[in-house]
Amino acid sequence: MLNSLPESRRAQVLGRKGLKAWEDGKDWRKYMRGYAGMREMKSRLKESVLEPQKRGVKTIITQNTIDNIGQFQYPGFTKRENKLMLQAQKELLAIARDKNNSNEVAMILTSDLKGKTILLGNDNSVDFGTAKAKNILAGGESLYIIHNHPRGYGFSLDDIHILTDNNSVKSISLIKNSGRIETLQKTANYDKIMINKIQTKVLKRCRKNNLDYETYIKLLLKEFTEGGMVLWKL
Image (cartoon, rainbow, N blue to C red; front, side, top):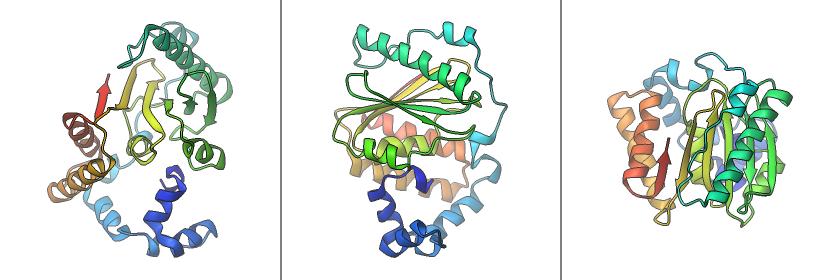
């Protein structure tokens, strides 16, 4: 989780001493703000759904899946931009199949959808905390991220944080190994302060009502979209 955060956010969560301990490979947990609360959350949410990426069977990507990816209409995109995204989706799945054993791959696209950075992950996640990824995400340009989910689940909490913690990320989209696509996109009404308040509110609700991880994700996305700050299209 910490690896996926930009350095500024990591420092905010850990504090100066905690960040140094983390970088030195020492025990950082005692420094983490709210770590006890996170452990409480873990104990009160059902353990079996805390990491949904480990559920289900990995789908092996086939050429037939790549050939038959449908044209997904991204909100606000032109016909040309949608075609470029379709090409990028096909390329991403081909890379995952040919170079990463059908595991997770992320592609960071520049605002013109032509510049591409590829990150290879495992069957659970992609690490956005590498120096390469951090340098790109720290840039001022609007970025689009697409990635695949080998086991067929929907957006994860890590995915949501990539979108909400990085000002440069305009949208994050996933394409499942079966070819199904969905996207989260910031709107002109996006308010980072309000987003953080929503996350805190939903977390408290989950703790109070002992709700599971999947419900937590659904509630977050419901609040984001009903507030008009994020578009969620399936």
